[in-house]
Each structure stands twice: as structure tokens, then as C-alpha cells.
Image 1 (cartoon, each protein chain N blue to C red):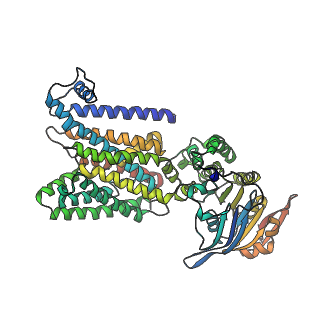
Image 2 (image 1 turned 180 degrees about the horizontal axis):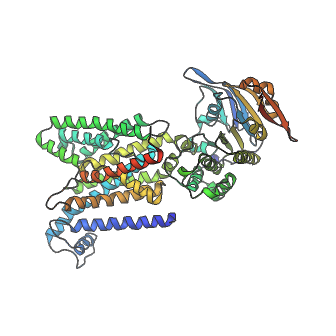
Length: 346
Length: 270
């Protein structure tokens, strides 16, 4: 297939997954709602009255208070995580770099858990997000400073650094759990499993306010990420201010990851799986990669969230567990394949 | 971009494009460059030669603005090389470095097109297509364009990287061992490309190990020995059996072939 037809195929695939996932999510649940009622309610919200619009106020409120914020949250969190992964892989020059794997998510989790314990009510809705961002930033900087050599990161070094950062962050979280009262403790445990349940519009607004500009910044830097694939020196020869790009990108990854985990908890492997699959279809050029990752990440999380609600009747699985269940084996496969190709990394 | 910032792709006249004065570089207490004075002229191929560890690549990285000298000055097109912003520098000099690995499986054509990125949003953008095509033709990689860079052999990667550097179309071109991974024919091709660049008025600085190759294609040769310039001049002047033998610690004989009497260096063997 030509690059162009591949891009068209990918666009159609993503659009199908996205629309299908959103509609299925909106109609599925304890209260049965038809697709026409969903469409009617949406049309009414933008000022177009149709016969489809639901007459039952319970349906209306179920859609607008419970399901829509949850769906939009899945979209923006998925987009943020997938783009954070793509950016991280670009600046590490390594397709295995991912916020969850290298410990950025854990760092953000520690920040958020601390905020919950010391009193999220005092800090407000954005307080947890800010703490998660700071935790993620420290973790990203740590991994970056420790694991890079000559502008690239060896797989082994990267993963070992991730193990160390994860260990430290987990110890911190354990300590926070230890000193927390039982209410906060429950909140933190629940949060570590990841869930999109109970998403509020106010939280969605905070996430979107960071995720949308974040994705746009990543898009604006896409060409520079392409050049960075040539190595730092060569990128500099082509006019990239590598130091500044690095700094901006690290803050970007921490922002996207921090805000993504702030309300929904740890949802791992999205940033690994999505950019990888996109790269396999349309190649590594970052403009298409970042854009498609944002859409694909959103679609993936909407579908994953739908599965958590429907796989087990009457119960809701943690979404972080589900993504790790799929992402873990995927990661294995990537390692196996790379190992077979290059014969290990030592 | 303002008019004052516009840069010509070629520089006329015989004003040197690079002026290095008393360049020194010390690393870990060891003097790697020990007072280099060197002028580089437009329209010439200058070969940097010398034994391993003589400081060739280091000198190249200082001249191209990759590394700051510990002391001394390097002026590139009339301004200290350190005073340029990365993008300004990228429009004035291109560099082929020794390490040319690519992190993600980009196609060869994409790699070559990356050479045009410094000219994004400038008037030069119109030349993109022509510059890329010319670079592809000069490096003999037409048949590789659709391949993934990561799947190429070392020599093919070197040629694709050279194409990227040529596509940048800068008045100054640095080539750090461009012939290292290449077969006999492509070595000659690359040196001919270097000559072609010089014929267009560009300045070409090339690090090579093969003294005969340097002797055959360079206008001037700068012979480095443990951080010092042992000699700078035409191949004829620099390549004497005495000098080469002393610097390399090996007895050699110099043959002069052809009408131009280009020197060929051969070790004395029993």
C-alpha cells in the first residue's frame, strides 16, 4: 500500500473505532438508552430540536451527568497518555519509553496520593492535578538525567531506571498509605487501580485544559522530533535547539501524564501500545503519529472503559488493570521481537 | 525572516569563510588541539588528515560550532561561530558526522528531505524538490528511496546521510570520514561530489584517512599531528615521504601519477 492509502485507511479505522466506541458507551449501562436518543440529546444541546430527543428527564440526566463526562474524560485522558508516550519515545530515541514503564505515572501517582492525604479539599479540584504534575515532572527529569547517554537511551538502562523510579515511587505511596486515614486510604487504593467512573465535568475541564494545548504543542514540535531521530548532534546540525526542545518536551510529558492520572488514576501502557501500532501503519513521521495517537488513544480508552463496565455483569473492573492486562503481553512481544532482531541489548 | 538574515548558498570572492586563530581545546587535562591557525576558502576542498587521535574530528567539530574551543577564536562567515543560533548555523554549514544511526524506521526519502528543514518558511523552500533530487542523484541512492533507513547496509546508510547533507545546500560543508564505510567506486563518487560542491563555490572540509584519496581530490591538505598542524598546503607540498613518514611513524614512498602529479602514498613493504 502507498503511504497515502495507508493514511486514509488509518483515518477511517480510527474514525470508526472512535464513533463506534462513543455511541456504544453512551447506550450501554444499567439504564438502556437508544442511539437515536443519544443523537437527539446531543442535537438538542447544540440547539437543534428533533423527534429523537429523549422525553424522559432520567435519560437526559443519565447521559449528561454520568455517561458523557465519562466518555469525554476517556477521550482526553487517552489522548494525553498516547501523546505523552509518543513525545517520550521521540526524546529518548527509543520506542519502549512510556510514562508507565519508566515510572513517570508512579511519580505522578505519588504526587496525587500525597495531595489526597494532606487534604485535596483544601487544594481544590486542580490541587491533585498540580501535585500529580509535580510528581511526574520529578520522575521524568530523574529518568532522563540518569538514563541518557549520547542522546540515546539503551533499552536496558531505560528499563532499569524505570524499575528504580517505580520502586522509589511505590515506597513513597506505601508510606502515604500508611499515614493516611481510612477514607483517604481507600481513595488512594482505588485510584491506583485506575477508573473513569464518577468523572465530573469540572474534572474533565481541568484535564482538557491541559491535554488539548499539550497535543497542539506536540504537533507543533513534530518536525523537530523527526530530526531528533537522526541523533542529537545531527538534529543540531539541522538547526534544532536540542536543549530547549528537550526541556519543553519533558515538561510536556509531565503535564500530559500528570493531568491524565490526576483524576482517573494509573492507566498504564496506553502510551506504549498506541504510538507503536500507529507507527506500524503509517510510519514514524511525528506529525501523523502525534495526531493519530491522540485520536487512537482516546478511542482505545473509550472502548477499554466500555469493557470494564460490561465484561463482568453488575461490577466494574478497574481500567488500569485492563490496560495492563493487554499492554503487558504487548510489551513482552515488543521485547521479544527486538531481541530476536538485534540479539539482545547488552 | 528579515532581509539582513538572508544567507547566500554560495560565497563569492576569496575572503576566507572560516578563520580559526590559535584554537586550543583541553579535555581531562590533555591538550587535544594545541594552537591551530587555519583559513578555509570558498571553492576549495580542504582535507584534514593525520594519524588516529591527532584531533581531526575534534577540529572539525570546533570549526562547525559543535564544540567550543577552550581558547582561541573561530569565525564563520565573519561572525564568531558561537554567536549563531542553531537555525542560523544550519543555513550556513552542513555536517556529515560519523554516527548516522536513526532511532525510528524512517524511509530514505524522508531522511533526505530532512536536510531541507532549515529552509522551512524561507524563499529557498521553492528549491526543495530540486535540491532533494540533485542530492539523490549525486549519491546514487535512487533505488533505495522507498526502503527503511534502518534496513540499509552501513555503506548505504552513509550515502543516504550524505544525500541529506547535500540537500541542505549550505555554503560550507563538513564531511567527517564520508568514505569510511564505502566501496572503492563510491569512495571516488563521494570525493567527486565534494569537488562538485567546491566547483559551485562552496567550501568543503573533509576528514579522510586515505592519503592517496586526499591527495587526488583535495585542493589543500592540512596534516594534523597530536593536536598541531604539521603542514598546510597543496597535496604536492604536504605529501613528502619525510613528513608523512615522521607523522605516521612509518616509512612510505610517494608516487606522483598523471599530468597533475597527484601524490599516491604507499607504505614501504618488504
